Image 1 (spheres, rainbow, N blue to C red):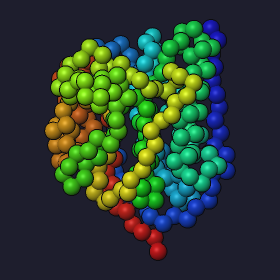
Image 2 (image 1 turned 45 degrees about the horizontal axis):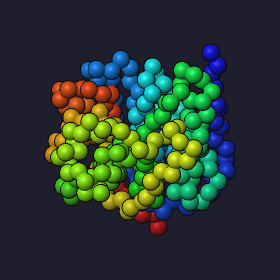
Image 3 (image 1 turned 45 degrees about the vertical axis):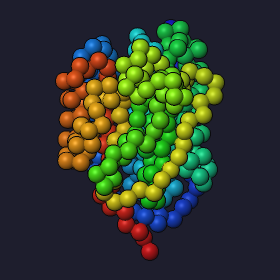
Image 4 (image 1 turned 90 degrees about the vertical axis):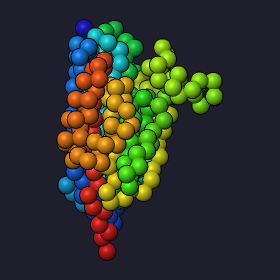
Length: 274
């Protein structure tokens, strides 16, 4: 069987920038195969640079992918996407982090698509992509699929990403209620994902981060079984590691019908550098 691998070496070509805000965070993460699946197609990773140069130009990266395709193909798609995104984003020459992140998502899309076409056992594989980048006091999100990014600020939980699913489109058109969508037979039909089409066009947006913000990235194995009130409670009352473990355990207790993955990131300090 033909295998395709790619080596990505981060070149010293990322633009130089002056660090204006030093960010301190606490991070926790947890993933579980669930009670039904035979393998884990989810993948999470984070990269926190130590050098001020890279913190200034690229910031901290947190990423969750939920692979699809079966027979371990989804696992390969999510692993390829995580590695490709981080390496391409870090080494991209653009001074714009948003442009570099878009290019990294598109590079991952091309790589997964090429591998799925070249290897019969990988045919049809793909993955969601949800990324949080904390850079110079900004929170940048890159998103495709139905994994999610939440933010807890001042006790209020906000879903920052929009699910790229068939039912979400129908709900927005007014033809289906939110309650109907939650139990619809096509609620898991994804309309955008890495590796499933020639063009990805991820959603990329940013907002100002604040000290005390708590962000959570998760696969739908969490949100299938854990409601917003439970998510908000865990994020508000537990540290990132405990919240991650508790949310995964809640998903397993609720049925564990899919792989379940969480990263929780708490912004402890945003210190301007004069």
